[in-house]
Image (tube, rainbow, N blue to C red; front, top):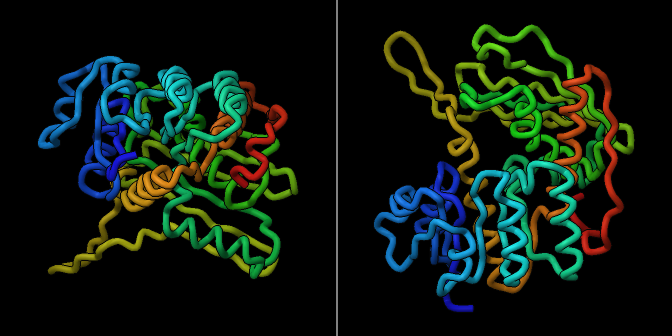
Length: 341
């Protein structure tokens, strides 16, 4: 491995282009060696001002480009399974944005493929684990100072949803972050899901069940509720409160700049996840690069990606059928014995 880790970035959309920028300008120890996107003009735009990186329309060609030693997958979810298998076949470490694979059957195939290798190559992009506030909450809960966690109360709000957003995507795209965060914070698997649907907001597109109230049960009796509201209109807000036997702890209180001028004061509210979690993305990619250069794979595993997919599918069933849905996980391969929680 050279002085700088050569990374192929697959996907040059909103997320992929931001990762190209991050690897080039923020994270030390790495360089962008190749970018792949079916829209090569978009890939070239993402690489503007960056020397020595090649552009490809095909993901496999990018993986085979000179100098590529690791892969960052930021392409649309349906392309992830093929890209992960291609990286595994080449022995390349991977940071894969969520969802690892959109459906649980595909996610299980990835888990089984990596287990056959006998070593981890994939880290899944649940970046909230790298957020400073989430990290402090995790440390507090693990310390036992507040006693046994009883409940997590979570809020997930977006200014607006993309045109293609569906009612199911509130769960399998938005709430997937809360699914992983809850498993990680509590150290427990989620075992059942119930989804309640209040009257849709007037700001929601016609036919979109927004907001939703999602309730998760865990294997040791804790409850996790999530208010997900993707067309709230005013800002991007992510909050979490852990209620324990001997106290509670709350994060996500919008400690933003307050501007005071004639007639009043105004506090900025983040409008985008790339603003709210900018530092978490930086920490995540920095940790991945550092570990990869040492020949290690850390962070959320393929098993965590699979578990999130299974829970999300149960949530969509609960939404569609209007009743509680149970979560059924496959046996966990030994490779992931210490994974996730």
